[in-house]
Image 1 (tube, rainbow, N blue to C red):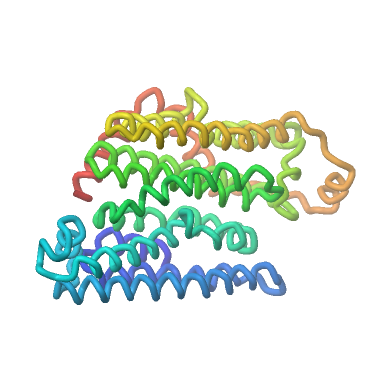
Image 2: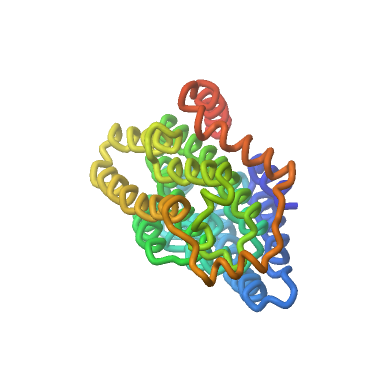
Length: 369
């Protein structure tokens, strides 16, 4: 249901189908977030996601009602014309209500994207939900929301505000985290800042750069969450990764390469995804935002490098050694091995020949425009 909703969302052409395509995976994720029986954290995450998700859905419907009432139709291109040209000048409607409707719709979509300042649900829901559900939340819905935001375009600099807040909160919020899923939640918030920045600039090249960034974010997230699932931590604490290089040297190398790529360390492909977005920002004279993006990337690199240091250079504590002794050994099945290998290959080797990725992103961007 989650994958079907995202596919329908990408192909949606009017606001009614957009709403139905958004709610189809959301209702499934409500249930999946709270499916762990006997767990108070899982029930709390499902309830938080349900309440805040219902609020964002209400804001989305209210914004759609305003825009559809002003334009007399539900087509996305028609409403996009009003938002970009100004309500009273385009169709002789209220110039005040049009941006308000656009703000409500964009804010609701930013909530689904877990971008700041609508990010408050993400760390708690990611931490309380089962890890497989967290992976779905972090990856699948964001691709469809990206396509809708590109169709709407920037509205009253909301995306620029979301870009700045997401970069800052994502970089600073993860510094004091002790659980891996909360850290990945803040990491996702920071990455959504880069994605929103490309959409805010609005040019073909910047949207293509954001799409490349989104594709690589999905690949790196798949690899990271698959490794976390394969390791099966007791409490999902960051310190549980200590000594991983001695217990599982292959997984340790895979996780370290993925984390360094997410941090944007050259020559891994994550560096070039940031570089392409930054290049568009410099081209269109977003100098202050470019400086902020570089500073936030450096700050965020601290907790990624800290994780690599824990994997390779931190010995197990007596408490963790006791937990690992009591825990039953888990063998990595073929499907997870295939996912880790398939996602690690582009992270390490796509830098040698990125032409296929750029060509696919070009075709996809042409379809979005």
